[in-house]
Image 1 (cartoon, rainbow, N blue to C red):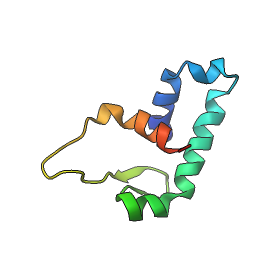
Image 2 (cartoon, rainbow, N blue to C red):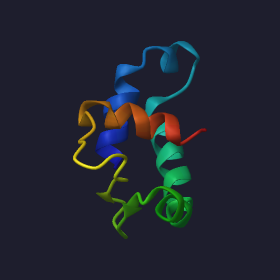
Image 3 (cartoon, rainbow, N blue to C red):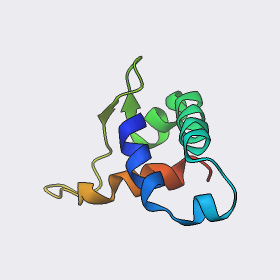
Image 4 (cartoon, rainbow, N blue to C red):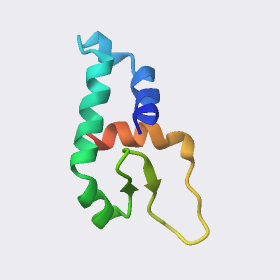
Length: 81
């Protein structure tokens, strides 16, 4: 997940404009998501393994596959919210 989150953080220009370090933002988001691992799995069927790798995403609609290009942005925003 570190790689996926870093893709979204690198694309956000406002992070550095606000005086934040991208590496610290990535680590903070990853820490938030991993600390809420059980809740994310229980409520959203989004599971992570012990190496903090994303294993599954929720099935929103039968026979529908979401655009995975938006996954990095989704995870980045899921962390602080």
